[in-house]
Length: 146
Image 1 (cartoon, rainbow, N blue to C red):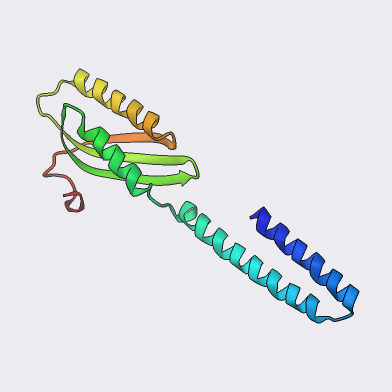
Image 2 (tube, rainbow, N blue to C red):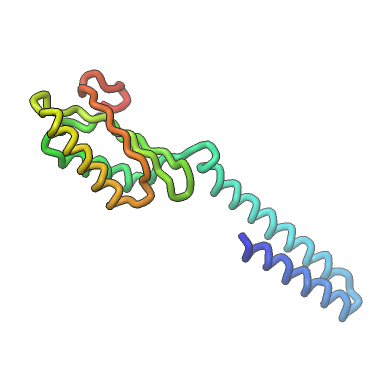
């Protein structure tokens, strides 16, 4: 962004310098049009970049697929119902997992496996700062997840 704004300042300098050197005001007008185009493009780019952060956007499909694969590898997970992600900031992703666990898994196994999953997700994707796991039967999961 700063590069684009500085480019506009350099164009303004050249436009004014050429107008002053030649006495022809066309150069100043052309520089003004170029500056307007640069600043307009910069505004559009900034709007697109910040839109997702303002209203929230999901993590990239690769991250979502990777998190799903990590969850599927757990021995006590029978089915990954849903993986929801949300960017809370440029380097802050929130993850919510809906998992169908083996009905015979003990509480200790669940705690250990969920803790390991959380650790593996954060190691693989440093932008993930919070992981929430919801135990939910595959049949009780929302229809959109099936």
